[in-house]
Length: 474
Image 1 (spheres, rainbow, N blue to C red):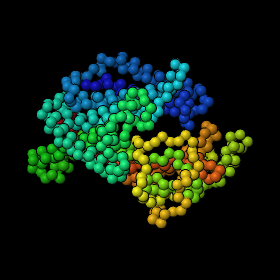
Image 2: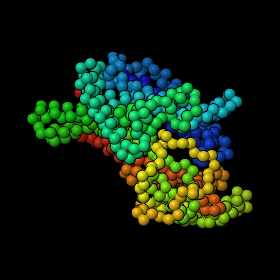
Image 3: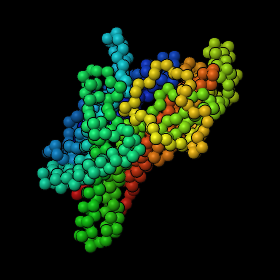
Image 4: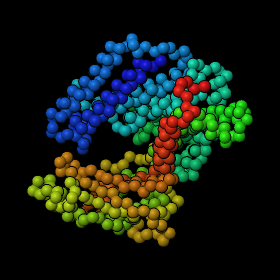
């Protein structure tokens, strides 16, 4: 079963790794990592990648009959089917990103016009696929290997689904405490921005931040992964305890060590669900201040925080003079920077925690930024409130690379488990007014926790315990 499919995935995965390297290095898609004017390397690279996919597919079809599986798929309601469709969705996702990334180049070459895709266009097409991927991951462990009866489906999914609904409601309740302005019944059950986008209308955002799609769907499917795995583990522990006359703790250890590959894989699934919850909450409920302008020495507010630029690594006139001389090629970067291949423009910020009643705007509901960066906001504070508490210093910077003839921005982040403060420094004027973009990203710590859980699950699954059995699960 799936022998041909597995070989195809191996060939395609290796091809895509080379293709991704080619896309960033060849210069056909704009990147600071490109080979520049070295056309010869690009030509060799192009021949190499097409040689890989061509020879791989030739060998696959040459031995097509030898790779025939020993049995066929008996039912779509089986773990084998869920595994296959899970793989298929991943392939469709990879091909979609690959094709959309090349679309501007292909449309320009063959249709004499450039078709571009904005981030929200990717979100429009990728969100349903990711939701389907999560659903398959959630229901897979509860399906039988060959087929599943209606009785087993009710037994394996009724209680987990109810628990997942309760956990999703609890997540909305917690979010309402952090971002109360984003939660309302009208917003949760509204699909208007999405339907407008599908009808070709101009919209500021595809989704309400608290909308049941995609936020509710993603949270529910993530919690469903946890509850289905949790219910199966509880059933197996109770059965082993009753059969072997063991205590719950000893039965749990015996079960996990005897089938560590299975439960290590389940742990990876739990890590994926935690990771998705972190991505959804941090993306949909972040506070964004686009084109925030603040003079050095003043204080700008975002949410419950004050952002205070207090010093620069050099005066504006000095960095402007160095930039003009390097661009004119009358001087080299080494004349202004010691040991650096770029011009450095850095501003230091102090971040203070100073809560107030009015909060910022959630990401999915924010207004579109102004086209031009305004002067320093007159509402910026001139002095620090007495109750403000210093929590961090951030040092975002800009780097000018003369070889690429462009500025590259380096962000600076203050990380905590509940919320990250993220500053992107974009420009500084002669009057010392700093233009920046600031974000408050809630629950970013879940991304790190989910990654650690996935890593630990993979390690646990690979451990060579003596009770390991190779073959189908019971």
